[in-house]
Amino acid sequence: MKKVLFMTAAAALFAVPMSAGAVSPQGDTEKQEYLVEFSGPAEAGLMQAFGVSESDVLHTYNLLDVQLVELSEAQVPLLESHPHIEAVDENAEVTTLSQTVPYGIDQVQATDAYAQGISGDGVSVAVLDTGIDADHEDLADNVVGGYSVFSDADNSNPFFDGNGHGTHVAGTVAAVDNDLGVIGTAPDADLYAVKVLSNEGSGSLAGIAEGIEWSIENDIDIINMSLGGSSGSSVLESFTDLAFEEGSLVIAAAGNSGNRGGNNDTVGFPAKYDSAMAVAAVDENNNRATFSSTGPAVEISAPGVDVLSTVPGNGYASFNGTSMAAPHVAGVAAQVWQAKPELSSAEVRDLLNDTAVPLGASHQYGSGLVQSLDAIND
Image (cartoon, rainbow, N blue to C red; front, side, top):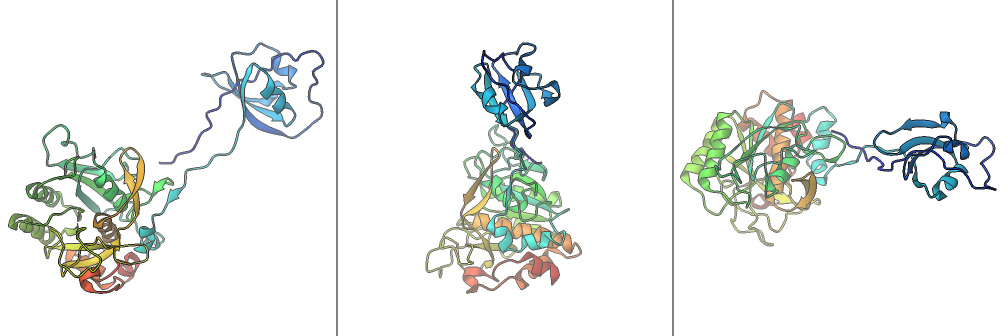
């Protein structure tokens, strides 16, 4: 999907009679294209009063008194000063809107993988969150399905995100490469909106378990859970274990309960389960975010500070959190799995850990910064 900024100027060029003593522009001068708008339909013959010939009129618009006309530099001020002319706007060149590559996409080598034609194509990622705005200009092409664990009218639609969190996570995983907004880590991956958190951002262990079950039943390759709590349940652990056993790679945010010292065990659930990859957050300089939870369950790190991504309503915003780090890992996993489809979920997991860049203490950074191209080329 590409967008251009169109000039809204409208114009109809029929010049009004010049007063006595007025001088028409003389000589053959270089002409440029202009959009000229009149205050109403011009009378026949008025164009010629400004020295404009019929061949100079390139296009006449139907809905407004507007014409696209070739004018000399001398003709422009004459038209601009006439009381029956509303506007004379140069027909300036326009281009597609630029697309921003968030720093984290480069940091995890996703752009290097793009250069080798690896973009997560054919890999499915379930975003268990607040839903995904499926109409977003940067996500619509990749959101292919979904499910909500809620039955009430406000939350039953997985493609409506009244919170924004899930849409932001989805953009980091797979915002489309479309010359606008941002690009995701795996811009051709298939996104599934699994709404396990309400528009208020809250949910339950039972709801998360239901979302995991739906993902298993629908053969989802990667399950991203940028959510968590300080307590878990044996049932939730069993569903997380089952997802991994059935071939899904389970990725979860480690949590935002860290402190500056970073020596406490603060990883939340479900990230704390052995079957989930607990993702810690670093900044653009690979320094641990002070909020990032720490402990022996931390498995890998990814960018989670000031992460620019999609938000509902075709918007974009920067968020902080291990919630933002986890989808970087999900996107990298999608790239790696596209490149190496023969691998199992356990083998992809091991490969991501084996090729990560060590950053420091394992209870703070796990194996280190996840790296896409290194994993693909290993």
